[in-house]
Length: 220
Ligand SMILES: *Cc1c(COP(=O)(O)O)cnc(C)c1O
Image (cartoon, rainbow, N blue to C red; front, side, top):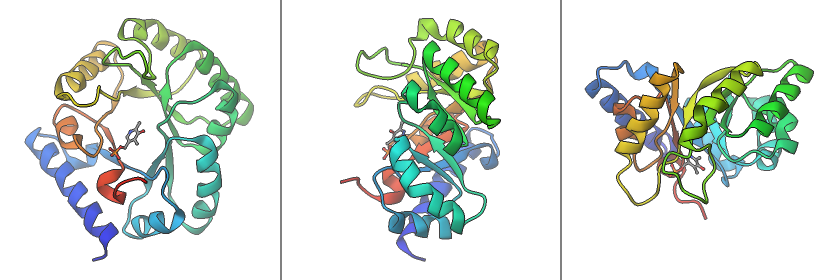
C-alpha cells in the first residue's frame, strides 16, 4: 500500500470503530478528504485509493483544481467547507455538490437565485458559530431558528448543520450542542469533526467528517 491508501485506511478504520461504539453503521458517515492547498499530485493517489468526497475551502482554488480531476475520474463529489462571499455564490453552485458554509440571509438569497438560474441544487449545511467566537464564520446559535426559516422559505435543500468548535478545548460539548440543535430543528445531517477529533464527532452523531491533515499530511 502507498502512503495515501494507508492513511485512508487508518481514518476509515477510526470512523468504523467510533461508529460501532455508537451503534451506528459506518456507512452512515461520509468522509470528506479536505484537499485545500494540496496539488493534484497529492490528490490523485487518494482518488486512486477509492476516495470520492473531497473538500475545498476556496472557490477559486477549487475552480483551478477540480475540472481536470472530474474529467479523469467519475463519481467525485466536491464539498465547499470555507466561507463563501455572496458574489461567488453562482460559481459555487456551478462547481460544488455540497455547500457547508451557509451562514447569513444575504448568502441564502444569492444561493437561491443561483440555483434557480442554473437548475443545479447543491445540498446545503447551515454553519453555526457554536463557540460564539467573534472571529469565526457561522450564524450565532440564537439566530439559527430564523436562518433556518429563511433557508427553507427560499427553497434551499437543507442537508444539515455544520460547526468548527473553538481550538484548544475539548470539542465534545460543542458537538453535542450541534447535535441537539439539529434534533430540535429537525435537520438530519451533522458536518463536524476534523483530523484531531473525528472519532469523537462520529460517536456524537456526525454524518460528515472533514479530514485534511490526517490524510494529506501537514499543510505548508
Ligand atoms: C481545513 C479544514 C478542515 C480540515 O482540518 P484538518 O485539521 O487538517 O483535518 C476541516 N474543516 C474546515 C472547515 C477546514 O477549513
